[in-house]
Image (cartoon, rainbow, N blue to C red; front, side, top):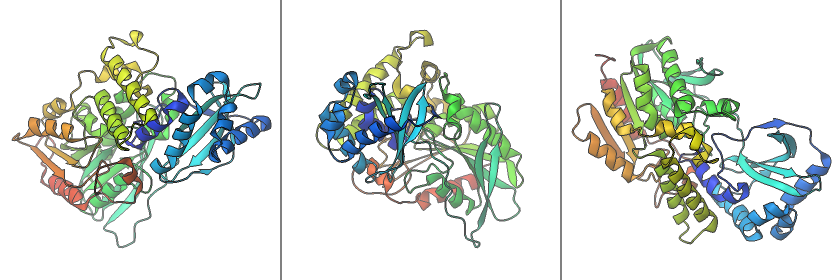
Amino acid sequence: MPRTPKWSLMLVIAIVVIAVAGSWLRDRLLPQAEPAPLEPAQAAIADRFLGRIETGDYAGAVAMLAPAVRDKLPEAELRQLWESLPPRLGGAARRGPPRGESVGGQPVVTYRLDFPATPLDARIAIDTDGAIIGFRLVPAQRRYEPPPPLPPEAPLIEREFRIRTPQGKPLDGTLALPKGDGPFPSIVLVHGSGPQDRDVTLGPNKPFADLARGLAARGVAVLRYDKRSFAHPQEFANRTFTADDEVTRDAVAAVAALRQAPGIDPDRIVVLGHSLGGMLAPRIATADGRLAGLVLVAAPALPLEDKVVMQARYLASLSGTVDPVAMAAVRELESQRNAIRALTDEADAPPRLMLDLPARYWLDLRGYDAVTAAIETGLPLLVLGGDRDYQVDHNDWARWQHALRGRPGATLHRYPGLNHLLMPGEGPPNPSEYLQPGRVDRHLIEDIASWVATLPPAGG
């Protein structure tokens, strides 16, 4: 789920749909659906159920639920849930045709709901008596849609780039290269949390494409790639994994592949990590051992479990009124945070942990301090953030600032008006602005390009 922007819009979706699932919405580890025959009788029931919800007949929809489900999703909560989705996801959804699927052996009828911000899948399970025994909204698996092609006069070119890794299937990406002979300094972009494509597409915005093209136009080659949980989510199904499995190892493989690419200076490669990617960038640097520097953008300095709770509290406060669904999500997250803090090993883990991440994930991050780890790399550091970022906020920035102030090789910039996507905005920060078309701030791009230009070769 942060699973979304991460702290992403996925967290907003999770808060408003928690009542549907009866548990935390997954965006990293979704229940895997397999194609299955569509039963016409079940499709008719599911169509009637969604139709009642869409026309405001919430009592009629709840009457179709099995008693155990009805107790967990009363009419008032269903109304609040459904009517909160359009304003938070950019407008009304267009419903696609039903399709048959199987989730863990349970047949379901699935409808794609195309909201402007992000598509959701509505999964409806029906028992043999025609009662609805399951209703779950999950982020729909998306295909990568590239940004508009570059004009012929652009000062850069883009090439498809495949990353072969020791773990799982290869990952596809795009290498943006300045026009010319090179060799060029280069950057590998590392995503934040959640299943994200190479551009970190969110609604109409593609911040990684903006970064890649903006930097390549200023003389820095940039590799961006589809995250494994986006490209191959089935590899995470029903298994334990760590942040290294999700992020670090693929980033190290991307750096190694880029080092062999024509036109790239192998001794002047930098990792730019955004959000969770920034938190894990020091791990990537340590595993690689040959980076020239790190750019940490909107990087958390506090533990992940604390950041998720802090973000949920902020989102719950936005309306200015008490939102029962959002407050229930906050209380659930606080309980899960406490369970994470109490973990001693995988065997004692409760059945559900925050973000549906396995106990091994949380145990692996226990004691990991991104600030200390960044300093211990001994690499030049560029730490950037926006002062309108409510996801990685002033608490994180204060810690980075305190630890790095006056330290040789460390440069910090905080940009007025920029949000978590590195785009400008006004007023109290909120997720709805992610749905407005924007571009990554050019001053931030220029600062990164200028900093990379001053870096000595790795080991120099």
